[in-house]
Image (cartoon, rainbow, N blue to C red; front, side):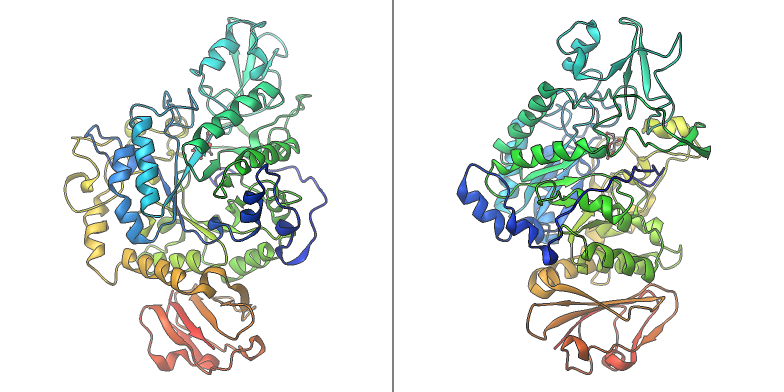
Length: 585
Ligand code: GLC
């Protein structure tokens, strides 16, 4: 899920589609009633070329002065996203919710929380986005509902209620003893006793987030109908939340205990019996069939912290019939500038047996921002550019997180009483929660950085907004924002960069990560050289075997700027944390 705590996943082996070169997808077109869709899907879907941008709606733009971002705020910033070069936005949940987990506790899957606006506002957002060629991807939260969802209220009302089996209810082991040792991802027992019916319910996350019972066909039907509700309104797909947690061992085996304690003071455990159970894939196939009922190639993105390439590959499905874009947490969580680590992971995913499209990101609303995780504290702005270049030149669909393009940093609360995220209250000071990566978007140098006119936005605006904001950075050609814009524009204009093959170079260099993005057939290619160390480095790039005849590269984007002499391929000198992107023939 994210790297605050690591779970251990059961390793289950299945036969994968072992067709080389990504032809699996073409051999097994998704089932759909409309032949035309099938044809479209087999061709070149939009999500393979898109740059996707995550918006945390509470923090993007407040349009009504209540201190919390909203839908009309997002709509008012669509021109910014278009100018940045964004093709699709994934918006974190805006469904009605008591907001215990800030929207990931849903109390109605087919409505918009008034805090964010109305369904009419949402429809306007989708159509205004479409006018700018931007697609809208919803967040879909299938693992659990809010305890305030009418389904759960019914379910808990009596043991014989028709919705009782929509959730996971079990007897305790004895008086005051939960059914087993399963732990919530957010600390302490995953079972909550409900005195009115004298049973426990299971919650993988907060106690206010009871898990749905995905073995119940009525639950599945209700959730698929919710997906259809949004697909009918024109959404371009879903990011599926916490999908590996959908099933638990029906025999309630205890999870294995590991050495040490977590931030909440519980013994560490391996979530062996509550995570990544094989039935997850059955559900993903069903979800994919729902998405495939609709035109326009809706995309499914899975949130699941898969521990290795074998597990990640399973998310695509044996016949490429599950999710198109499983988020790659291994790349996100390298957490150090290590050319060997990135090279190894990229090589692995390039060879994924499903031939699936990689989906990379470095930041999101659950983990400290990349500026802090990859920065060295001295050259962070240059390193921000290095990470941007990596994200936007790898062969993958890149996923950005709002504010990374201006170098927003994690700004944790300094006092426990200021913490909003419940895990920060529970785990303080070791676990400060996720407020730090959810602070308001920094638009300009005015009060509240242009995010809100409220006296106090829901989270404080970081002081760094005086320098790092959209307005200031738009006027500075050397800013992080200008760098992102140039990179995204280059991705659009250079088809080799967008669609070309990935060819690793200089495979053993401990500091310099270099690769080609190469169009099929001809010699034309984009050369990417990234110095992941704090010293200038000189490398010898021998590209003859890759059909490149040039002796030096023509710079397209470099940071810092590099003299032409430096780009001689057999004596290529790149500055500390330097980025070079050039063309070679
Ligand atoms: C996902 C979300 C996270 C949320 C959790 C429980 O991991 O990204 O923010 O707290 O699911 O819904």
